[in-house]
Every structure is written in structure tokens, then in C-alpha cells.
Length: 198
Image 1 (cartoon, helix red, strand yellow):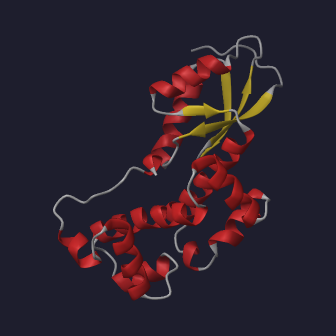
Image 2 (cartoon, helix red, strand yellow; image 1 turned 30 degrees about the vertical axis):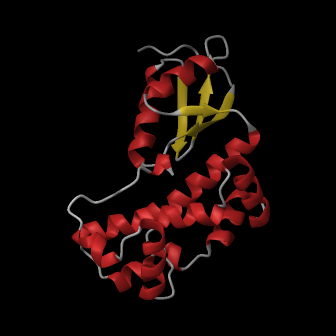
Image 3 (tube, rainbow, N blue to C red; image 1 turned 45 degrees about the vertical axis):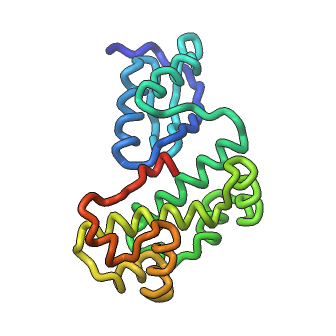
């Protein structure tokens, strides 16, 4: 599709329910398909775009994204919560071994430019749950994924996920899932929760 002449308007869209690299590709594809958006960068939860103000319609973009299960966010605190969620998913699912090296609080404060206490307060006010609980739930999903691959030991999983011991990981895993790690390994159909539902 031929693009309109773009003026210099640039903005960042904050997008709910982006939880994987596949989501990044899909959002980029959907925005480019409009024909009047120049996509500069898409990351988890965000898209930086240039657009022609004469034809750009945020409601139209929101409708396009909603068809794919995404949604634009315009509330400032909700944007920050989305950035927090995206940052945690990025660290835990795509950060290789860095989760065992970085403290979650330090990582979030540095990445988002706010004290951890402030981020935690906004997160709780907007979601009704604590930031610590959210981090544990995301970690648990990553642990489920690593267990189902059966490629690394539980000790390696504990180290990679930042747990001080296998026992600590096992206890927290059971608290969240109701399964011991051994029981979970034996479950035929792995009980995984989509990250967008957490």
C-alpha cells in the first residue's frame, strides 16, 4: 500500500497485552498495514511511530489492534503499569541469565527512572495486586516453560531465575501452582497461563 506523505509528528503508543516477540511482529505488521504510519520501533508494550496527522486516528488504530487482542492505553498510570509488566517479562523471559544477577527492584528503577517504592505503589493502585506477586507469577510461568523443555536441571533453573536454592524455588512453585515440581513434571498437559492473563 502506498504511504501518504509523512509529516514530522512522532509519538509512542502504549499497548496492552503485548507479551512476546510474536506480539511485537504482529503489532508492527498491523501498524504498517494501515499505510499511513511509519513504524520506527516496536518493543514489548510500546510502538514508536511517525504519522500523518491528517489521516491518523487513534480510535481507528485502537480498533485495528483490538481485533488482534491488543489495546491502546492512554491513562498515565496505566501506561507506567504496562511498562512495568513489559520490563518484567523482558527480564524474565528474554533476559537470558541476567535475572540471577540483577535484583528486580534495581532493574525496574533503572529502566523506568522511578524509585521501586513508587513503581510498586502505582502498580498496586492500578491492578489491585502487589508488584512482588506479579513478578513471582511471571517467574512461575518461566519455570513451567523451562521444566517442560527438560533441557536443564532444577539447580540450573533456580540459578537462572534468581533463587538462592532449589528448595526455595520448589516451595514458592508449590505455593503458586499447588504442584510440587516433581508432580508438575508428571502432569501430561502442562498447566500454563498466558502472560496477558496475569
